[in-house]
Length: 145
Image 1 (cartoon, rainbow, N blue to C red):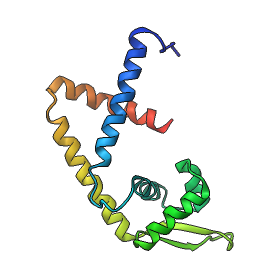
Image 2: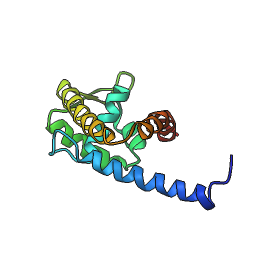
Image 3: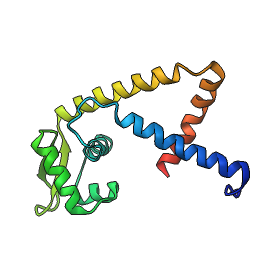
């Protein structure tokens, strides 16, 4: 792997970081339910990807302490967005599962964010859009690393 810490490569890394952070912040504001915190939305998104998980698994995946995840889960449960069910193998544990209400809200939120991003990308010229479209799989790979 090349050394990216100097010159034009370092400048590109800096631009990429700041641009991704700014777009991420702006996307977070494009949500359907303003009463949910970004942490709550993140947990719902994670549950949408993995189906269900224990509170401990969610805490690890979200990089938060278990007591913080317990509070997030309690708030989501009070809003009817998740339910706690007995763990299939260990009755001492619980499994967190999203509700249909959560799935509907997430779908509406994703649609709103996609519309916003589509509108924004529509302001690019054809060459810029082609470059961004080609970069999408690479950005996805970075996000998964």
